Amino acid sequence: AVSLNESRHSAEVSATVQEVAFDVGQVAPKGAVLIRLETRDHELALAKAQASLDSSRARARLAEQQLNRARELAKQNFYSAEALSQKDLDDANGNFQSAAASVDGAKAQLETAQLNLSYCTIRSPIGGVIQTLDVRAGMTLTQGQTLAQVVGIGTVWLNAAVPEAQAGSVRVGQSASATLTAFPGQTFGGRIA
Image (cartoon, rainbow, N blue to C red; front, top):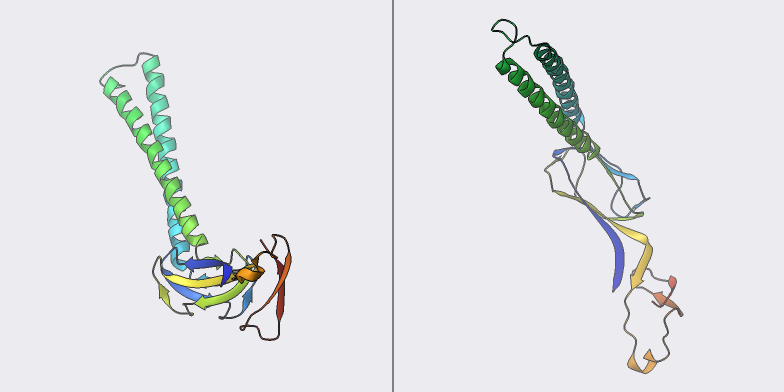
């Protein structure tokens, strides 16, 4: 049996296939773009997440200014019904804490949107032959759907049975050659591991 270095690809996001760069049987170099997905929805989600982060940061700045003002008034003992009460100081502190938490949430949404956008370009992590390709341009994918399988050709292991009578003459590191019916007329060299 021949064991191959392989890479299986699945959709990380739901999207429509824009381009399939290779066909089954073609060799894809390491890092090559195999499939491009439509990015418009993910670009919009990224823009929305960025706007949410900007808005959260602005609210946090305002809440911080209000808290600093309340602290300054409290430091100067301006406690009165008209100027500042302890409740006002507590409210300002709570508003600031809430705004800071909103910034953290918006940052997480932005990172998620950036990650999802990056998933719209599927690259081959290994150089190899496209063994299966389960997509075509225009298809709508769901998250987790199988897309392609790339079989590496850099290192191939051949598991072979050696007749018992010849097993004593086989040594680790020894050079070997093999012929495969899948590649008629070709001899492949290697070493015993």
